[in-house]
Length: 395
Ligand SMILES: *Cc1c(COP(=O)(O)O)cnc(C)c1O
Image (cartoon, rainbow, N blue to C red; front, side, top):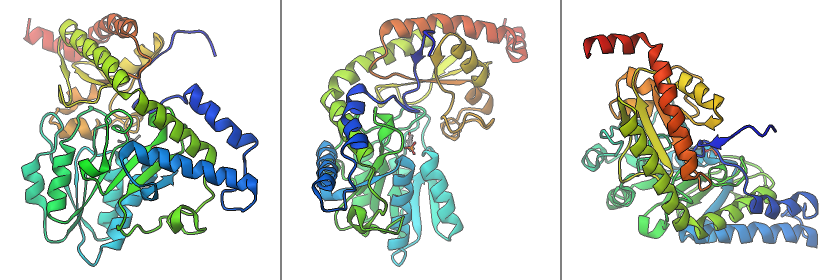
């Protein structure tokens, strides 16, 4: 590694493994490698670590440990939740309601279910990216078996009125699943109080390694295996358990929950400072997402007359990692489906910048980014024919 400056503002895409997490994991790679299904002492160490981790995770959301199923990632949890409800409750109905701003792990699973004959309603959102409760109520049919709405959006940071949505589902006896990958470890969650039947989480978004996640599934729901094989995870998710990663995720969850309030407070300060400076000091910019109901770590700004990709390359040159649209959308030229859903025209959606601030980002880092961003935007605009035309028409 060079000692080049690095300001990592892409923690909504992934995070590093925290040193304490790495340390907690290490023995399970080296000395405590037993297969949790065996009966000798070495295996029992793994079994104990597995069940302790399940208890730690369950406690963070007020669930029973038996309601936590370890998976390989957030995508798996999302797929499993939707496909399982669809298959298990087919006799009751074939209609699923979701939103237009879901992560691809939900969106593309819904599209796949449509091909299998399920009917899916993709709810519109308002200009801030909030699901409209009246629209949701109107979309419910006698055949609706599942509502799946994300807790907080990964691109624009908008937090949904999630317990109200859950309440509507409950009143109609419809299962409610939430993709809480961006919310977990940042916002306090209680599956009882919030009224969730199922919830997806991914470890690598909160300083656990990539390749581990979990699905919360309320007791009594018929959870159909996605993978068939051994008896692991109460016969629901076969495959030898990934003990080091599960231990790491539990450690990361513990740390994130112990420090949640303190971190959120400092992240909000940096977030608001970034938003205020960018909006005030760079002309023709706008904030995307809700101003208050917003993840503490999310800044998403549209900067007119520039291309997101060029902006990211210029930021990379000064050691800043950021994102335009979602990570999955970069590499394709289509503007993000989330920015289109909140009503941005294509050309404005193209020039959007997401800065996600983890707890290590300081005010100085934020100032460094804005100071350089001003110059970068000016340079890029000076090369833009669109900007030139605009200036001619609006002298
Ligand atoms: C990152 C992310 C996922 C996917 O999680 P993986 O563990 O990377 O598969 C799903 N939903 C949201 C909202 C995300 O931000």
